[in-house]
Length: 321
Image (cartoon, rainbow, N blue to C red):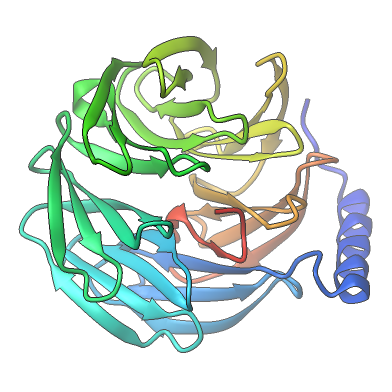
């Protein structure tokens, strides 16, 4: 089912903004959008759904991870640079140049660690979150891309694209637990609220559903063309489909398709607000951000942003960690 009623979208937006102002908390989140083509970082206030700052960020940034204590972490693939930035000012607080191909990033706030994937050398770097010093290296399959940490902090997983597998590690000991064959060319992945791991396979246009503890595949669910990012809200999974310019909506109870939502051109990064009431999607090719209501399954606003928004990772400050 497609959702395109403009009047309903505007009414929903008005209600969302009214609730935000009335409660002071409903949309108390900030989006940090890495724009690869423009070498910039866009900060968006989700209460007003407006951009409040745009900062230079060289080196073709794509990967992003929100941390704690005013820290934001980004990966600029061309310059091989990982940065720790101030969420308030965009100032670089520390940085490191990594010898390889850094791409994906995830913050483990519980242990003060960052995980960064190395596309060229089949590994994850483990960095400290303050000085970004290298603490360890973890072996993965070929071309690791996305990284996810389970909500309970037990597991860290990487999507090993050219190996068609996922590597799962114990987040405390950093020991390798499983290497799990999935679909073709997995790229993005994320743990659901129920603890299960959803993996987007860009080559087979489906989602692999895994149990990280047992290392077993529980299901394979078809989605749109080139699934990239995954987020969860209202007991549903939402998957960005790059080539289809859509979101696939999947019931977490039945794993059945509930809807397909048209968004911008080439949607990539996706995240959800702390209240779970708004999804934010970065549309790489048309330089916009889409805001989607996970209840009505409608786009409630589209906002222009900087050139080439990717937002590959967890990019909402105040959002679900």
